[in-house]
Length: 98
Image: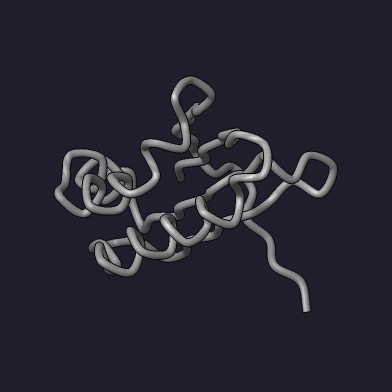
């Protein structure tokens, strides 16, 4: 799983979200991706998180070196001149509830 955190300039969220949707739409779904979420911080509306969930670590690593990733990120790069962090995570517990 990849979890990214970033903060856009104040008041730029709507532009960022449009660029994000554009990049994700153009990139399509990479092989092995199970879920994709863009989330906005309730208490800091200029901050967001993205989670990308993959079937396997190998699928995640293939994505990290793919044109899909480059296509997905290109439109949003201008919104993160400094504040952008990506963490690569291993899922330990994965529960769902009705």
